[in-house]
Length: 534
Image (spheres, helix red, strand yellow):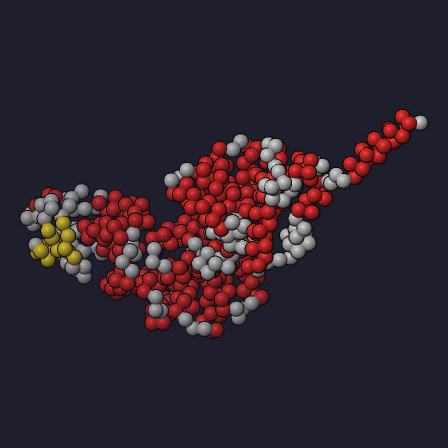
């Protein structure tokens, strides 16, 4: 009986001792009563008050203190005098590993939460230090270290600086290039997430807004993942819709490139290709007039034109098919009419009935230089030269853009040539040259006028010599190549042909003309040149 009483006492004492033990969760709640009650990581919040920031930082300090208590306890150095949050007795009666995990998880959850609601997050000194180290690493192209700082800022201080996102493609591109084939997709996802967060935190930046960011996102997505063509195309399209004339030249070019890829993949129809080309061409034309770095924009224009000219969607039949119904549905839509006329003119589909109908309607709705030019162009196709000349002169009168005015003068020169008035044709071609210095086509027209002139008259030295008009014709072709390299091949073919028709040196010898002599071709030409022989 006595033995049983002793055992019962020991059992009761044992149970009583365990009844005072606390779970890690209970001890955590006791140590941090504010967390989960007064201070919650609420997803509904869009910002924190200064007081909330101070309170969260106080709790972070207390979490660090609690971790120090555990370290001291495990080292046997925790006493009733030096504990900060948890006593030695409390820690003896709980699951230490579980408590450490709760402290660790809560600490980093608060740090991440504060980073999404305040610029410098939980610790502004720590944040600024990492920003500085990140920027230095980027500057030195030490992308391995840069990634470590970037990763820390990205996860815990995402509102702190645009640098996290501006240079994300550098550090993630570095990681992508080093990654295995299986890991590459994850790095692309990370980069896309970085663009999404940049839009979230910096999408209202006046200089680099959401539209700008989407342009970079679309370009990088296709760069790293060709299978994401449709998604990348969508980002670029939205970017251009938002940015308009502020779209970067490279974004406009890439959008046209992806448009062609989408067409080849059967994801869009020919009319979409034509529409996109019209949109991009119009924006680039407006940008050319507005930007200071015109060479960059000209390069984009050339690239876009090349893509469209090589596209299977860019045939006259497909362009006309794409726009005929639209014209009939909206014959009073001025913007649509101008777009149709521009594309048909650009692709030399001006002998179509659609072009003529659009041009006439344009002129009825809003007489302009372009509508007059369009009617003139159609009249020229029908060999109605008088009417073509009348409307070209009207177009020149109404036009304010020198480059377009030069185009109209050149067309007028062609009309004059068709009617046999070579002198007038040259005069109009020279007008075109004076308005646009890099215009090679008028030089080539003058060359053909000279070559066909049959002039034999020399005014210096005086006399007659056959085929001398080919000298001045070749001079004009050389000038054409010099000012406009795009017509070099065409000019070279004519130079080769005309050079075979130069005078022979025996005939020239009787006039005292030798190779390299300076001579003046007469007739209506009156140009000085250098003697050359076949």
